[in-house]
Image 1 (tube, rainbow, N blue to C red):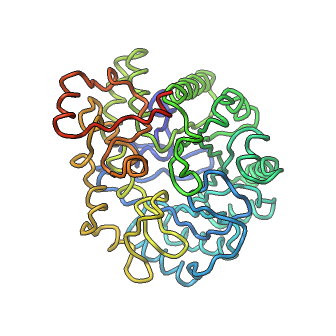
Image 2 (tube, rainbow, N blue to C red):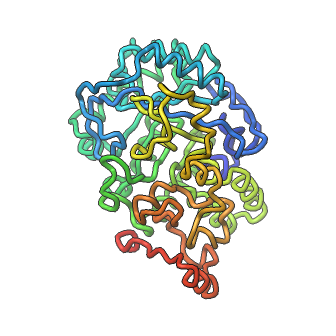
Length: 423
């Protein structure tokens, strides 16, 4: 995650300790900040638990390819509690209850409450359509620190993307119910060709509705989002989207609004933000470079700072690697699976700086990004150490001169950028 408010505008959030090794204060709901990590590489992972594959919507980009039906073999309540015990012993900082749609699971609140009692920060990722007033209060009482409600644009675009008419209105009612219950809540939106041109309207909507946290995700090629470049932004569109996000976040801070804006799943955003800040405020830009270097970008994300357990108990490097399993918690403890570098992919993910290739390897800003998302490289080039095809930075911006290009040709590390994204 790139905390735009923190990095670009000098703000603060409860996640600063995890992301940047910086102290932060409690949020407006009284939630304590994360502990400050000494090194980003030594962090325990935030675990995304796909508690169920069942979902009442059918989203175009769903990484679990979920539908509104029962799936066999999901972890039982007892297995879920045993898993939470293991995660607590392993000292993970937060457990994100996801799906499918997690609220389709009857024992979800019981599992959340159990996690909270084990001193694990419970978070939920939901489509929001099932959160009535009673459910909002129950989520709050169970100990949920934050509820992220997914939208994919304004009403017509969202409902088309979600596959169910009326999903937008139900999600927004769920958001309002959370707010009235005193539950910290925010929006999650995946940037695609379908919605990025509405970004100004989306920011207007965020402000008018009093939404104080929004995460803008880059598309990751997985599940029903695996038709790689159909909905993805071109490099020009990605830069335009980032310019809007930076401009609107900066404007919000200038007016004293309490809005936390983050971008997710493309650490090139951090480099782009740094380069823009270098033009605006060179002195602060160097402090930002230090924070981004501490974070390490992709170096300390997949396989280090975030992991996934699916509804069958399979452990994956992150939620987008559903086709690569490291082990199953029914057979081995999560911590043992996670720290086992005998698996070649896991060894590489824990040591990405030594494995990345191509323009990522020779990038002048590699310590800020470290190759971003390895799963996109795998999907595009069949090589998890190839460059992330979604890097929209120019050769000039990353210092890729003629000499470095010749070096890459000699070492066989030329990976052509997708023409669909160059358009």
